Image 1 (cartoon, rainbow, N blue to C red):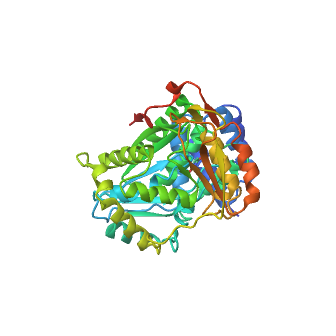
Image 2 (cartoon, rainbow, N blue to C red):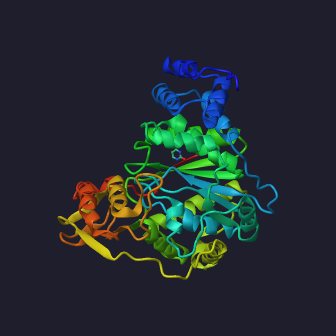
Image 3 (cartoon, rainbow, N blue to C red):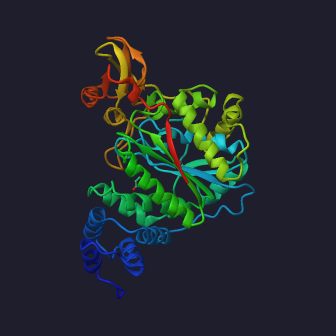
Length: 429
Ligand code: URA
């Protein structure tokens, strides 16, 4: 029988009483929780104590290192090119990874995008790509390295060996209302990204109704915490704070978002998606030592599309196959005429989720076809009765609850000056 170094009750009491946890406490509790020697209810109590009493920077760094140490670390040092990755804190219509990874690969910088599935109102990159016929999310570590060397970009499922403590803890936080907590979010994201072994990392920290961080000062604090964790671990890290008050682009939902990503790779697509893709690509390339390149040109001249095609084919997908389309649609129209000032990201995300694009529990299936197409964005002038959105689903009985979620999503005739001019608010490095 293992004799445990500490008693979970003492560790919980330390944080409950507002004191800092020692490095030894943290190493032990993360390891013991991963082994099953600390029970879920004990970790839940500790997570809530952290939620209420916060953590010092030193505790967050120790917590992150302990989560990295719970699993394997990837090693890309044998590759012939530098690596740079991006992580978004999650938003509605956030399909940026899809055009971004092949775009950066054009410039001989490898992008190891180890991604996840969606939970709640934000979509998951793997769910989106799985709407492409034949595409496979699971790759071995060797296959990831080969694809990075041959093509330069891979988007695949993060293996179960990467920060297993975070997998367990994230699922627990999800059911105990302890997700929305800066030390826990920062350590969760950064443990996975540092273990992934990327050389550079750009964090897309979303701000607004559709994001974890609804206000700017909390988003800045989260970004600063993550940038400091990455830098201290030897990863060149910076963050862009970007708008998530309204969905990104004109589509929300798996196959719909792939369609829009392909439009961007073909040199078209909505301006906000193109602008954010380019801004993130430039920053990822800067971290990899390539500042003097024309990123937009690679979208308009087909080089990024060629990388996309190779990347999708390498994982069994057919990039020229037709994407699935919903059998049932319903149009939502503008209730009055004027300038559209609000199209609330959270409401649209929840509506899309209710249409079947997202899952409530991690084992639930998602519909590839479900989602929402937007026909107007904040700043546009609309006339009463004109289509504002088209809802898509395989299961029409879902329309009523989706429309309920959209009841106060739209504001027309407010102050047009409140619509942000740029998608990127600020850079933190
Ligand atoms: N994404 C993560 O990976 N972890 C969090 O805690 C929040 C968002």
